[in-house]
Image 1: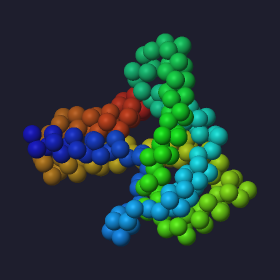
Image 2: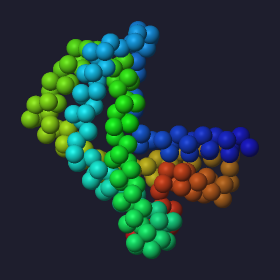
Image 3: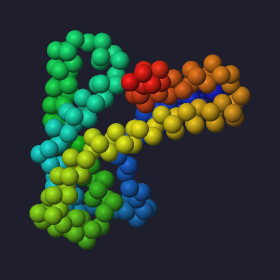
Image 4: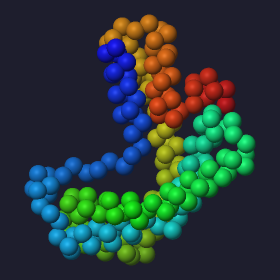
Length: 193
């Protein structure tokens, strides 16, 4: 039972891997309520980072994820296109809500001086170009990160089984569960590509 709990926790932690990390905050920053100026600067900064290319990049990333999802592949092409379109549209529609939720985090984390510098930079042509390219590179960066995940999962399953003494079949099942939790095709499907 303990092994299964550890595997579940590892799978859940791994499923959250692609999420953007939140910067650690000092106790002083956590205790203070950000000023209206910091809040507005954080909002401006986040709006500058979210470019018009965001929906297209989300659509591309979702398309890649759908290609590796066996359940999605079982659907008719028309249904896959509809799901992709609606998911990308709804994700893009959530951007203002995401920004609203992130503003207090950024306002509490960065100083007014830092936020002023970020806004000043990202409001320049060079800053806009960097913001655009940062969005543009997301699908390829995601693929690069995900390319090392299968090896990491294999090592994790091996180390856990060394610690808990599981059988080869238990290790195979654990690895399969981890891969599924991380949204990765089973090893047999991946190797046949």
